Length: 196
Image (cartoon, rainbow, N blue to C red; front, side, top):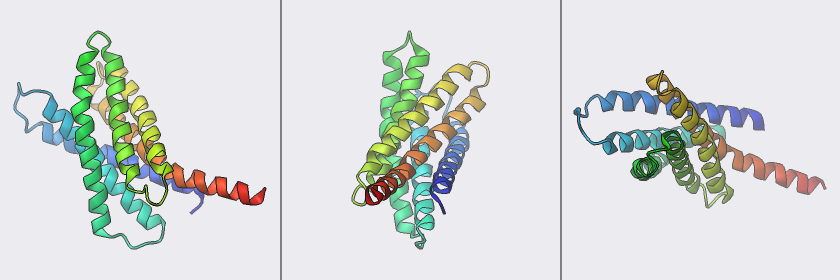
């Protein structure tokens, strides 16, 4: 698989993970009683997003590298994603509450924090192999979270369900693209250095 195919398919895996996380959280939120505080649904949504992205990216990365997919590595990626997602979900609501007058800005920043934390957490899984994956996962998550937050912040008044689905997909795509970009960037830099 060439570099562009890797970036494309890894981004596609992240987008699919985001869509599955959105659908799962939409079903789970129905179980939360009306009048409950908002934090359980925010933590569940972010944990599901991190878990699905963690499982999908590890599975795709192992498959792409030609290795046998090992359930323990997939479980580890999923658990790292859930942990990072729960932590970001705990930070998401206080951030939005701190900016009540600027709700769209708080929404965008909340999605950026969620994307950055999940991306950094999943990038840390590969830190022994490639240190740049942490930074690239974090930046990719921030960019995906920014786009997702912008879509959700602007369209949530008219299309709340669809805009949230787009936000999940864009954030998942950004995180997975960032994680996949680090080794591609490193490989390209090594090839340019050797050729010069």
